[in-house]
Image (tube, rainbow, N blue to C red):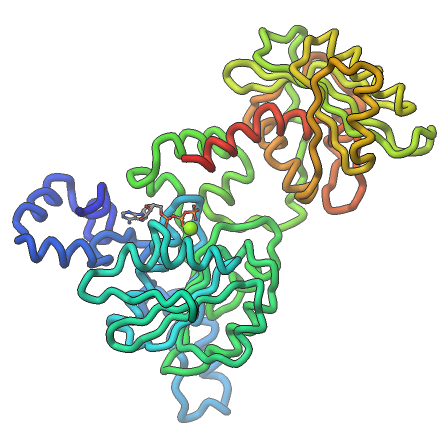
Amino acid sequence: MLTKDSLINSRLNLSYRDRDDLIHELSEKEREIAQYTWELWGRNNQLEPTREEWLAKDTTKKLIREWLANPMNEGKTFQDSWRTWLYLAGRGNGKTRSGAEWVRQRFEVGGVSRMALVAPTAADARDTMVEGESGILAHSPPWNMPSYISSKRRLEWPNGAIATMYSAEEANRLRGPQHEAAWCDELTSWGDQETWDMLLFGLRIGKCPQVMVTTTSKIGHKLLKAIIKDPYTITTHGHTFENAANLHPQFIEHIRKKYEGTRLGRQELEGKYIDEGVGVLWSEDVFQYLDQAPIMEKVIVAVDPAITSTAEGAETGIVVVGKDAEDNGYVLADHSGHYTPSGWAQKCIDLYKMYRANYIVAEVNNGGDMVIATIKNSDASVKTKKVVATRGKRTRAEPVSMLYEQGRVWHIGKFHKLEEQQIDFNPEDGESPDRVDALVWGMTELIINPIEIKIRYL
Ligand SMILES: Nc1ncnc2c1ncn2[C@@H]1O[C@H](COP(=O)(O)OP(=O)(O)OP(=O)(O)O)[C@@H](O)[C@H]1O
Ligand SMILES: [Mg+2]
């Protein structure tokens, strides 16, 4: 059936009343056709930019001026269309749906017959672009339904048009095949930039080869930045909340809680590109203090053990953190320092008992199973959990810095050394501040992971 608020938010801009009138006036057959007419439902930014929009861009005007000024172009025609349509929007904004609809449009009325579909992995291409709830099969009309031939990794339309699926992990498969158009989903999760180069290289048949890129943004992503800057790119943005009527209310609630009022919210919600270097994680003014902690719902002792215990070596980060019932975080204590292995283990156990912590969370990248064994050797009854760093430092620390930005963390007293490390922390320079690491592990375990899990399972 026709979807929630789309006719109201689409280019038609109808009122609720007009929408209802319109739907009522349609015959059943017309209603079925209308259901598959994306122009009726897509919001302005989800629909392919018009030629007027392309020509109105400052960069396009510059291209035209340069083109006219070049005597070599005498007698030739200017390419008056974009090459890449970048739909850079917030999470859940409707990017994938928009891409799937564009593919249909290209095949149905755009005269295209060979197209590439590129996703971060082969499973993403299948599960999201083709078979997903926002994908091509779910939104193709019964009278022009493509067949999905999984063995050939492609879709075939009744008129013979073909869309071939590619994984960004296999740039080499794109070496050779030629396409008239391509849809690329979640480009900022592609591991390999070569895939993009290969794709463009093969995009050379048809009157006007074009690519649509639908993706969320990523700080400092070089390829994304290059695409934005390319004068042959036209970009549309969209906010997550624009699509609220079509998203689970709890998804909206979680994502609002996580990103609203943060710098990263510009990226994750608004779909804006943030350049690297703007990436300071903690500034002096984000710290808030209390003399006493309120009632804690959960307390954790977080430890990031150093490999050596020499005075010159790295410190062992030991931080006690807690959270209240509203998911606000509290730094209760910082006992980081130079310890022998049994020394830091004993310190953690003392703190665990003193703060009646739920468990000790320990990073085991440096010491493997020895880390937990060291704690258990001192006291086998304490509860522990090991964590392994697989994601980059920035990716780990960013959500925690956002909690501070949102005013959801309090320090119970001033922790000079920890705060100094937080302010100086630059994830890109390779230094590993131990106090910050312990803090990040603690807050991630307490607040970030539970929210992420809720979002994932909605
Ligand atoms: N204009 C629209 N009218 C009706 N439903 C829409 C519209 N745009 C998107 N949707 C629906 O909203 C939901 C989310 O859309 P979609 O999966 O395309 O978002 P996304 O931006 O790709 O999300 P993610 O960030 O998770 O990749 C889907 O059910 C999709 O069909
Ligand atoms: Mg998507």
